[in-house]
Each structure stands twice: as C-alpha cells, then as structure tokens.
Length: 224
Image (cartoon, rainbow, N blue to C red):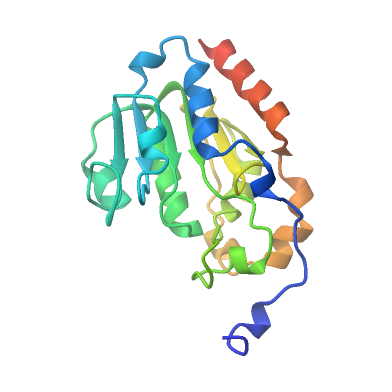
C-alpha cells in the first residue's frame, strides 16, 4: 500500500482536533431544529445512516433515513430515492457516499426538494490530511473529496453557505432563491489533489462553532 499510494502523499495537514470539541453533527442538526418555533412539524431527510447513531438522535418524529445497506427506514440508494420521491423537506443531512460526484448529485437533488427557509447540511468538508481526502477510501477515518463542492459553492448564485469547523467540517446551506446556480466544474475538479485543497483552504468560508451557531440562528430568524 505504501508504494501504491506514494505519489498521492502530501505533508500538508490541517490542525483540527475534533475529539476535543463537545459538539458534533447531531448536536448541530438538533440546534437547527431548536431554532425553528414550529419544530414539531419539521420534516427531516437523512442520506446515509449507517448504524443510526445520528438518525435515532434527531429529535423529530417526521423523518426519513435512506441507506442501501444499514440504518434509516428506507433501504435504497440516494439516486433511487430522489427518483421516486414526491415529498418536500425542511432539513436535509447528506452523509452518503463521500465522493465529489455522488454528493454533488445528492445536493442538486436536495435543493429541488428543500422547503422555503429549509436547511441542507453536508458532512465532512474538512479533511485534515491526504489520507482523509483520498478517494477511494484507504483508511477508517474518511472525508473523501466532497470538499470540491465547496469551491463550486463559492462561485454559486442564490446560495448562502458556511463550513463550521466541527466534526469533520459541517457545510450548512441556505437556498436564497429558487433561481440558484452552482457551476459544473467536474472536468476541472475531478483530479484535484489534497495539496490544492490545503493551499486554497483560506478561500473557503470556514467559521468556528460560536460564529456558526449565531449565523444559523440569525438566518432562520430572518426567514421565519
């Protein structure tokens, strides 16, 4: 394995200690729910549920979890779900296959079914080193290359987003308009390596937890 992946190695790394933070993706999602005074009526969708650690901890009754292997309450791929789905949702969490191509497709499908004033959260936008980034997966801790979407979102229109520096990097998205635009940079981005991400990291809207929670609360309050 060392020889096979030697050309992909990078000494660059980001110094984030997720274990030192007493706040994870589940806490973030439940915080978003708590910011809405009509929280009992919130419709929640989760793509990628694994062992239901997150799905079961979401404080809502009206929720759908999609996973082809284990977890959730619908056994199918995200592509299959979006193809047959006719429902709208208020909060969507994307934690499926952590590849740029698949997650971009899940995001575009989610933008079509998110209710007005809804929130979309995408998981694992801050890989700390090349191993966490490398796709296909080479170790247990894996973010994949979903971070490439962030550089498209920077150039988008009708989209407001921030990456909150907790639990692998949680990307929170508000759709400002139904006339949104996200550029298709697949051919340009598909082969980008970790060094590109590291060297351009400061161009992304990464914020700490305190600032992130304040931003979310203000956004939801202004839209109610």
